Amino acid sequence: MKQYRILAGISIGLMFILSGCQKQYYNKGLPFTMDTSQLPGYSNAEILALAEDNYERFMHASYIQVTDKFGNFHKIKISADIDRHDWDFSNLQTDGTIKNYVEEDGSVKKIGIDVSEHQGVINWEKVADAVDFAFIRLGYRGYTGGKMALDGYYSANMKGATENGIPVGVYFYSQATSYEEGVEEAKFVLNNLGEYTLSYPIVLDREDPMQEDARTNDLSLEEHTQAALGFLETISAAGYPVMTYTNRNYYALYLDLEQVYQYPVWFAQYADEPDWPYQFSIWQYTESGEIPGIYGYVDLNLEMMAP
Image 1 (cartoon, rainbow, N blue to C red):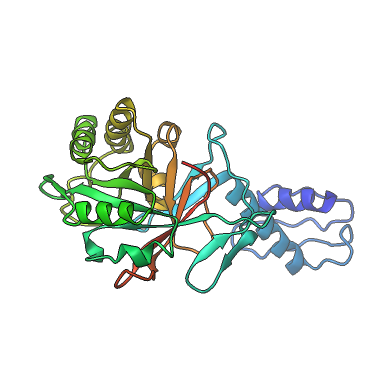
Image 2 (image 1 turned 90 degrees about the vertical axis):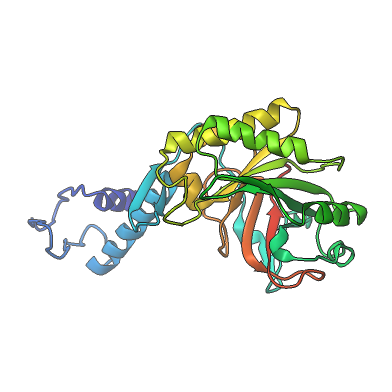
């Protein structure tokens, strides 16, 4: 432990002159060297490697590190006011396509999908044998003109899923640019829900469309956050559970997480395991899943904790 404290000091640029050390000038660009008599068995190369590893561990534990769409690197300090998760992702298992998380008692998480008109006609009877829940897209706002519309397969998907006993939630793809437009989107959802029974939340889907002419391109973090809160607060006030969905970059760069984390979070990151310090209810881990009853690829999700 003493050695790691020494290495931690090295890794953040503090050099203590130990007894027996050779005095060196550590100008930028010069190779790192020190007398290792105080650390028997270690070479300079090994000490430097350990120091760099220690520094990376410190950075990972303290900051969310992300590169934006322009290639700029950002460090976002991890908040002490948002609950962190304590999952051990060495418990993840996969058959090559479907992931699951195995608890200490041998139980596993629920597996789900999210679908829209892009999946076309779905055989929900077959899907019911493969998944535990589904999120159905209710509608969207266009990223240029801002017009709202129902998903072309919303009714068919809700009917097919519920008739085959699949618990469902719904989501809306948002391109709101203000709190007021967020409220408008929420009212659109409430007016078009229909008589279906929801077992999962109504979800706000906020994403960067990555298009030069997107109406949300010039919004500040506060404006993105206010647009989200307009939706979230309106749905919540109507008595429905509500949740946010987006990817790692959008959560980190475009939302005030301390405000957004007042509501459950659905987190998207396509990776072997998620790299996110905070709790989240659902993890979307691939957009290239395959499920019987669906032609082509579909998003796959794990319910990490009840939303």
